[in-house]
Image (cartoon, rainbow, N blue to C red):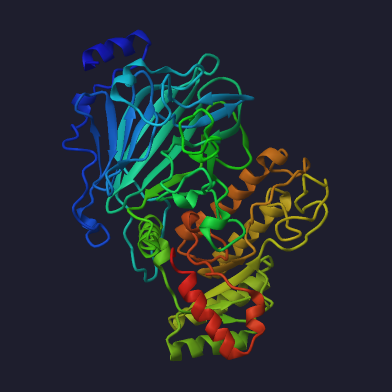
Length: 555
């Protein structure tokens, strides 16, 4: 369809014509062409852009390593997701941009219906595809520069001090009948020097009454079958040459691939020509929270979904995929490249702390963490306690040493009224760490207020936050800051990550034994067994050498 005809069609349905040829450069060359260089050795050659296709019917965002192409007529839909390093399109059919459930009903976000075959797409079929009923529909787009993920105050050495750069395209979509005043902004960002696409969605209530966002899927992509799929093997996502990660993680373990509950590979029973006779190979990628968010939006409110990050690999080689993943974190979350040499001190005695500071000066250490078992209590914000640690911070700074502190959040019992309630039993207990306080209780709000106050008034610039929020849900209906089970995880997660974002913006180094890298934390354990540290010292050293090898493939 020519652009003029497209403009007439859009005008008929009350939408603005995109005028792609006037607003965007045309993509030149073959989208499947390989880069001809190793980006790990020459990342400066990878530059991002947003283009229109030569026929003016689609928008392409990408760089020399990756590209995603979107149809916008008759609706927004992912047409191709190309791994340019291998020259392969990873999609087998046109995909929607997710699903959103509002007030008890599911609405597709864009997408097109009518593809006659689930294994591949012929160009001549595209003109016969139709809008999915009750879907959000494309209205307009805009292009911007991709910005940093978070605000980071750079106040100590780091391997990478640069924000990621790139391009972003934002598609505005309007709701179907009954949701005309609800709009979506679907964001895609692509980065220079990296084969990564980031996606997130804003839900905007432009109406005059409340709506409830029950749940959403920020991504739903129809992937080609894994090259390892067959009739006898039920594949897992590890068999796809792609790293998928979201910002809604960090709970309960040191490793991203263990704790990521948002990445789901599900079956496609309509894909009847797949290798598996029973059509049970998981070949649709979905990214969504396991529960919720169950958030009520008043008129004018905006809800931002989780971020999805998708990075194809160019092989299954473990060392090479590890290099990809490590470059991803160094680029997208550069604060993780801070590496202060610190001492754990298990005493809060003022004289011991001063002695430790003096020893750090002599031995080249940069930081002292007044750690677990020391007796330091960040929840004590009395004038006396604040004055004690303010004086110690001043002493340490006079010697060029930073002072850190410790707080335990989860794996502790507060009270029956505060702890998370297990939805299966209706009682406290049986949480991830046995008992844990609900962050969305008044106690939780007060806890973070106390930690902020302690850090601000003492000037301490390092927090070791132990037993951070592990992802527990809470079935209580009496806690002040969440309604019930459906919104309990969403509210608690954002309460703690808002705190981590604040720490990063204040230049506070955070040592957190859970995978909150994309939310501002700067260090995580590499994995260990507590019992190992009861072994003889020579065997402990052997275990740590094994861990240094086994646990640093991806980080």
